[in-house]
Length: 138
Image (cartoon, rainbow, N blue to C red; front, side, top):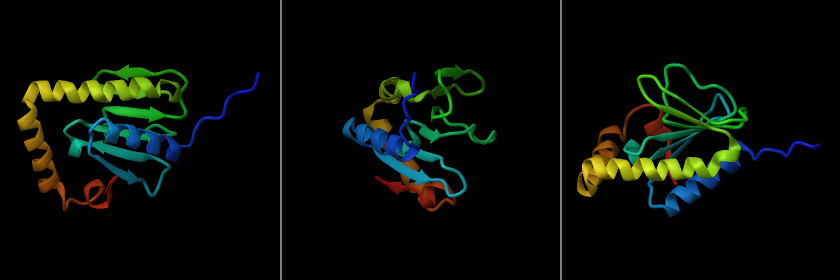
């Protein structure tokens, strides 16, 4: 039995960004320079972020949504913050979960406040070093 080849991190990031945009998200993308990871911030962070990679992330960084090509089974980590880890086979589940998370945030804050939070994050973080200064809106 031959193992099917997993899509590349670039391919996965492109696909997720395209679907997220179709679902009404603003997507910022940052391709790491020292690893193969790609980071997608959704709605200027109000709807959290997705890390797409092939290895465990840095301990001091916490991403709500993680799509990893090096795991075969999805799981959730509960700690100070809930972190979801998805295998490539669960890409649709990731998409459903980011959409559900956005809907939860809109329900929590209201649509107008959600938009205000997006604008606030965009303005306040525009010149911050790291992700914010290097990411491109796609």
